[in-house]
Image (tube, rainbow, N blue to C red; front, side, top):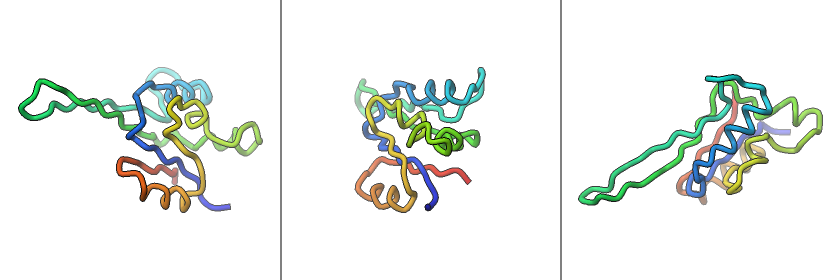
Length: 113
């Protein structure tokens, strides 16, 4: 079994924070503690009054990909992936995810040390 990770296709992330909430509940994190955070990036288009919103998932050092939950067979994927409403997060082997990432122009790949 190879190293595992999470691939996030940021093109489809709506910033709903479901992953944050699922992670906090799964791990019992209190106020100010996170396994994953969604950072909102707002940019103004040049020569326009329009703004653009991007959502950038940030995995903190506390993220262990729900290792205990997966090891016990309770589930086959981390809580954040399971509860992502847009299904823009995928859990799997890091090599497979890296190949899939090549087809996604706005994606991040996370794997804990």
